[in-house]
Amino acid sequence: MATDVYAGTLAAGEQAARVTRPSRTRSRRPRPTSGAALYRPWWTPWLWVAPAIIVIGVFGVFPFLNTILLSFTDARPLGGGGDWVGLDNYSRMVADPAFWLAVRNSVLYAVVAVPLLVVLPLMLAQLVYKKVPAIGFFRTAFYAPVVASMVAVALVWQNLVSENGPINTALTQVGIIDSPIPFLSDTTLLLLTAIALTVWKGLGWYMIFYLSALASVPKDLYEAASLDGAGTFRQFVHVTVPGVRLTMLLVGIMSGIGSLRVFTEIYILGGATGGVGGQARTLPFYIRDVALDPISGNVGYGAAISVALFVLTIGLAVASHKLGSKEED
Amino acid sequence: MTWWRTHGRTRALVTRYVLLLVVLAISVGPLLWQFFSSLKGPQDALYGSSATFFPANPTFAAYQTVFEQVPMGMYIRNSLIMCLLTVFSQVVFPTLAGYMLSRQGWRGRGVFYWVLIISMMFPFESIMVSLYTQITDLGLDDSFIGVWLPGAIAAVNVLITRAAFSAVPNEVEDAAMLDGAGELRRFWKIYLPAARGAMVVVVINSFIAAWDDFLWPFIVLRSEELYTLSLGLSRLASSSLSYDPRVTMAGSIIAIVPILVLFVALQRYFFKGVESGAVK
View 1 (cartoon, rainbow over the protein chains, first blue to last red):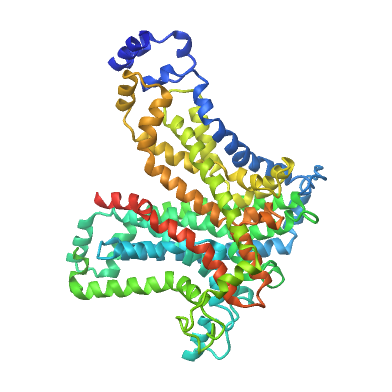
View 2: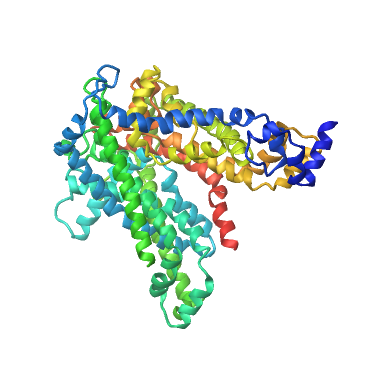
C-alpha cells in the first residue's frame, strides 16, 4: 500500500510531492500541477496521443512542406518526374492568364461574399435572439441549409435559376424582364449565383457565432440608447455592432477563407468545365484541373498554385486582422 | 426589452414574425420547392407560369426512377461506410489525445499542442495536391481508406474534447486516485461521461462532414462502385440533364433528408452553447 501513502502526501500539497519525487524523473518532466502526472511513465501520454499526432503530422503538417518542395519540381500525379526545376513553375504561373483569371474569380468571390456573410447573419441573429414563441423552430429551420450537402443544394439552386425555372418565371410574370436571365451561362452571373448560394448556405452557420456573441452585449446599453431616443437601426449600429466587433472580425476571416476554398458550387452550377470555357474557375478548381488529372496532370505546377492559394489565404487573414484593429482606434 | 418600446410592443412582435417568416421562406423555401417538385407526376408542370408549388398528382415515381437509373442504394451504402469510418476515428482518437492534452505535467505536451494549431492553418485545398501524391504513394488511391485516412483525425476535435476534459476539476481526479482508480478507470468512469456533450458534437460534425464531402472523394475515387452519394448525385445531374429533372430532384432530396433528420433529432446539442451563453 505504498502508493496510498504516496498519494496522501500529494494531496497534502505540491511541496510535499516535490520532496517525495525521485530526482531523476524531476529533470525529465515539467512541474506537475496534478498528482496523476507523477504516476505516469514518460511514454504513456505519447501512447495516448500517438494516433492523433501521426495522422495530423503526416496529413496535416507535412503536406504543406511537401507542397512547397513539389512546387520546385516537375512531378506527375502517378509518380514520374520529380526533378528539380527551380522557379520554372512560378515563372510559368505569373505568365499564365488562366491562373490570374482564377485569382480574380476567387478574390471577387471573397470581396462580394464576405461583407454579406459578416452583416446578414448578424441581422439574422438579432432577429432570432429574443425568445419569442416558436423561436426554436425558426432557429432550427434557418440552420437547415448548413447541414444539407452542398452538391444537393447546388442542384436545388440549379433548378431554381434555370432559364425556365421559378425565379425567371416569376420575374417575367411581374414584367421586370422580357427574356430569362442567363444565371448559369454568363460567367459573371454564374459567379454571382454561386456566391448567393454560398451566402445562403452560410447564413445559419455564422448566425450561431453571433448568437453567442449577442449574449455578451450589455443589456443596459440598449436601454440607455433607447432613452437617448435611438431607434432600432441606430441601436444596431451604435450598440450591437461595437458589442460584437470581435465576432465580426472572426466571421470575416472565416468566411474569407471559406470563399477562397470554393469548388463545389462552381462545379455543380457551372458544370465540369467550370463555366463556359473554364471562365468561372476558382483557384481550387484550377489546382484540381492542373494537377490532379492522372494522365495530363502536372503536380509541380499545381503545387506552385497551391502555394499561391495559401499566401492569398494568409494575406486575407492578416488584412482582415489589420482592418479589425484599425477600427478599434 | 426597451428597444422596441418606442414602436409599440404588438407592432414590434408582428414585424418580428413577419421577418421570421420571410427568412423562413428564403432558407427553407428552396428545399421545400425541390421536395414538392420531386413529387410531381408527368402531368404536373415543373416550370413556367402554369406550375404550382404543390403537386396536383403527387407520386413517388421519380424516386423509383432514380433508383433504376443509377445505383442509388450502392451510393448510400458507400456514403454510410465513409460516415461510420470517419465518425469512429474522429471520436476515438481525438478523445484519447484530447484527454492527454488536458492532463498537465508531461513532456511534449506543448509541442503536440502547436502541431495541432499549425495543422489548422492550412486550408485543405492548398495541400490537396500533396495529399493526393501521398495517398497514391501509399497505393491508396481509388479506395475508401484513401478517402478516409487524411481526414480521419481532425485537430479541431482534439481541441473540442480537450476543452471538455479540462472542465473537470483536478480535485475529482485526486479523489478518484485516493480511491485507487487507475488512469484508464478514471478516464472511462469520470472523464468520458463528463465529455459526453462534446463527443456528441464531434459525432454530428464528422458525420455531416463525411456525408457532404465532395472534392476529396471526387479526387481520390474513380471506380463508380466506390462513389459516395455526393459523387453519384453529381454524376446523375451531369448525365441526365436531358431526362426528367424530377429524377435529379428526387436524388438530391434523398441526400438531404437523412442529414436533416439527424440534425433535427440532435439539434439541442447544436444550440446548447448558445443557450448557456444567453443565461449570463
